[in-house]
Length: 510
Ligand code: C2O
Ligand code: CU
Ligand code: CU
Image (cartoon, rainbow, N blue to C red; front, top):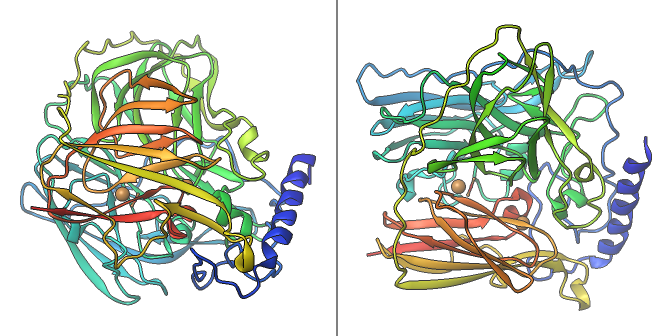
């Protein structure tokens, strides 16, 4: 156990003491811990120490594997049909042990779903887990009743069909994950999340630029190879594991020819990890965000911050003279919270990029990609406040709360109402000392500006996003239009926060 680890444990220990005084007081925002997970902060102090680090590390340096593809079983053109089975599956991670994951179709990460704009998607979910679950199509413009909301659970042993048609213009890099009430953090950290790509038949990026898909997930393994439940600390800060994986592998190797350009689609599929991505010796060209391509490439980026649930498309051009390598890494990032002096303070290698010997000429990107029209002048506005902090004092003192507009999530309550097709301006203010990634279902929005310490910075370019980080004490302003009737969720995408109440319901009315 090294010193840093010790400090983290020490802090966790003192938190347990601090929060242990809650006793039976179920103060405001109290949530019953889902079965099979550790008690939430504020519960009586029971021993749930963070796990010991595994004795032997995971294998590194294997060639990066392609994602397993979900096969389309439909004979009909423009229809994608398949089944996702939510089930347990074991895999050897640490030599001599076996790790049980919760998976879609026994695959970690979940299988890649790949469709074209205009396709109709029919996916049946079979729930073989012991908990209820749903499939949420993160970022996709699907009807509310097909979106896997917590209000539409699929019971253990049950199944249901999700069906939707993806409109032209929706090409982009999305993902899918469970979204049941309270069980989401556990189902995701045990392995349930997958990439969902909507392709365009008129993609402006030259097809000679090879594409690589990188799904980043976060795994915590105990020495015996098991995936331990959340600790009290995890429920506060959001769970961070002891291994960051890319396509389920620890620090794999991607090959690139010297001079070659590659298009990387990267998903942050972790519960709570902030990825401050940098490629040693290289800059990156940003070409796309959550909801698809930008109007024009943004070249020369030394780093890109990818909050939980965000996606980017970048083009990298290998300026390597063979033989050489570069490392895609996550740089230190302070997202606030308690005791965030552990893994977040370190630079974490994600992927090694090795050059081959066959040099190639770089391929130029077009100067225009996919022009994005500004959504226009808002005619309606909404303000939201994120807050989190230690308790209400008094009897239930020490209860950590995660609230939006001072309220904890209630699936039976409508928190906000929007009119169909109305342009709205949303202002999201973070009054807490930790970052919270804001996510809204059902559509993509355009960030207008960010205000910090009294200084407002206009967003440098228009982009489609469904998740935006709202840093501690920052305010983000965005524009959004909802185009389908029904109930939509909005929440912090640190899944432990979402699960403990930092979520609301928006109803879109005619
Ligand atoms: Cu990715 Cu409401 O979630
Ligand atoms: Cu979502
Ligand atoms: Cu949060």
